[in-house]
Length: 290
Image (spheres, rainbow, N blue to C red):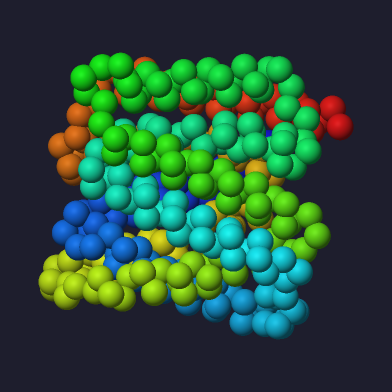
């Protein structure tokens, strides 16, 4: 393993730890205040971050954000906003652990959509992994038991939206720089959330104001770490380590919020993660063969 790959792996671990901490703060803040307002403030900070990065691009601001796909980026930004709102709402209703357990199916949804939407080849091994992952989600949701509730579908809907967002991102990256998509997702999302969030503005208490500031700082830190991670190593090298976010989130849920890791949730998560890792291995093997 090269030094860059090792650094990339550690950056990915640090990034998912920061994302997990961010989720922990969002669970508290969205429980105390309107979810739309909390997400709006997060997007304001994120938009400022991408604008700062764009102004520092060597090719200049105008060239850095130029795009041939304005409608695609508008749809991407809308999907990402909806995904964030749904998953944060899910945190407040069913907790961090169960939300992330269901959301872990997202890479498998991306694999399933990449065939019909991007024209990529999805072999029977990856379809088997996708099917196994869906079984894992059913184990987590337990739809035939008396403990199932509709809020458990929120993280699944969020995962579906993020999968569509990722597919559109990959499609747009085929004929224009990745940074343009990164920039417009932040800017469009901030505008969209401002329309939704301002009517729901609530005064924030002193202590929570500090927590909100930390939450926004974590939003910047996590994306910066992820950006640096992909500069250091290939995505297929570091992607398996992204599943550690489930571990970090589970620790936060148990220690901070007294959540309980139900046996069915633990078993289902293991099935989903194992299926996701197997799918990643199949994808890596396909790229090596090509």
